[in-house]
Amino acid sequence: MQVAGVEFRVNHPVLALGSTDWLPVLELRGEAAVGCDTHVAVQVQAQVQLIKVRLFTEPLDEEPGPNPSFTTVFEGPISLADGRLVIGDVMGVTRFVSLIGEAGRRQIRVDVDEPGWNAAAVDIALGPRL
Image (tube, rainbow, N blue to C red; front, side, top):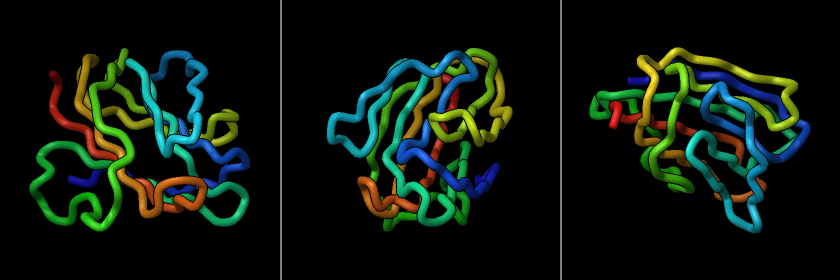
């Protein structure tokens, strides 16, 4: 089920998503996305167009869901300290916060329309608490 949809103009080509905790330094090192316990950093297209981000939560079998033509660039557990997911540019200029539910660990999957620096659309799917 889609619970949010936002568009960002980013000056830096990295979109960050995760807990409301302090954003750690995540080095992409040529990867389309990297993550840690609390955050995921995703390469996106900067200063060219708006980056479209859609957020989905369980149940994911309802239509419409994440775009099946997108490529998964990250999948794994993430810890949300207060049950909120923050999505924004790594410079802290733009951010969106969504209350997902109770605090705890959840499975997250991040899909993009085109992996790498040309990504202009991101779908985020959050599973139930682990």
